[in-house]
Image 1 (cartoon, rainbow, N blue to C red):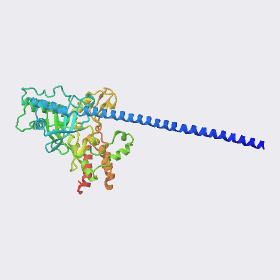
Image 2 (cartoon, rainbow, N blue to C red):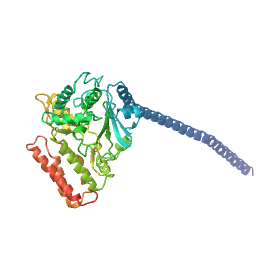
Image 3 (cartoon, one colour):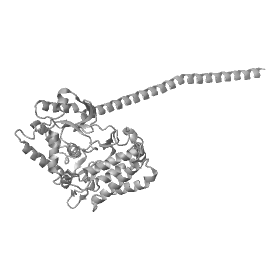
Image 4 (tube, rainbow, N blue to C red):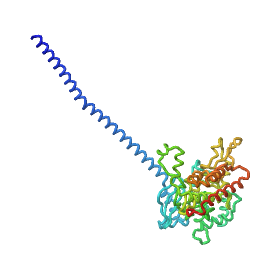
Length: 447
């Protein structure tokens, strides 16, 4: 009996010990759980604070960079104030001066500038929509200073007071000869320049008008606007004041392509990106008509009446079209006189072929014996135009002309600037392409 009681006591003791241990362990877990949860919440809180701070920092930096870029790029009101100050002092004059500086009927709208030295704004002039362009400071060397005269500290000091009209004509003639070469019809080109300069059509050129005209003649875009003013593929020059000028607005631009944030661009393969560029384009007959317009522009600038011009950036961003699907040039700053280009290239030092590139598309070869660039481009305007149009035209092309169109486009892209009888081959390919496209779309309402 005593033995049984003793065993029962031992069991009770063991049970009590186990119960105490379990209770202690449970209490320890119960106490540890809030500490663990608290630590986890503290970690999440710190993580949230860190990423919130990082987001605020990055966001502030992006806003600062964007604001700084905008402040540097968009200085149109400085340009306007400078122009109007000179107009009020009687230094310059032009068809847009009163509207810009007195009536306020010519106003600057959205900033479109891509470079600080060339201010570009959308704007309105009464009932007309236009694009306003104004020059700021001298052109940096890497932007093609050889092709444009540098803007002087006093850009409106020529011609000087007392210069006769005949003397001014000689100045313009000499300048144009340097720009477009002696083979151009220079007397007619001078007459065109004077008709633009005499904006009030009184038959006289005042000194302020002459100063505005001289400043504008330094710019390739203004010169080309005069040369091609009767052609349908160049926006009309609406007016000017000093070296500020207003061009007709192109309703639909660019020619093709969609704009994406640079972060998205990094993750899209080149092939997919090219396909995406063709998603938002007109019907194929309308694309064919627009393409014919680009070919006609090539004809206009290739050995035309007023000299030959080179298209040095034939990309979709440089072109647009109107409601009738007529091609329009958006930016002619990179359509340069061949004579000016060749002179600049002869003087340019080179060590590799890459040193002989102007814009995106005007390339010559490097003469390593002289370390000078050669003057002749390796690829003519038409070949560059066909390269820009290849994907545009072949996407959605009717099956019955697909093979022939592809064949002609590749033959066009293969044109070389230095090939013998290039002009004859150039004309043949150009006419064949235009005929093929017109034949296909001439009976459609879209054309």
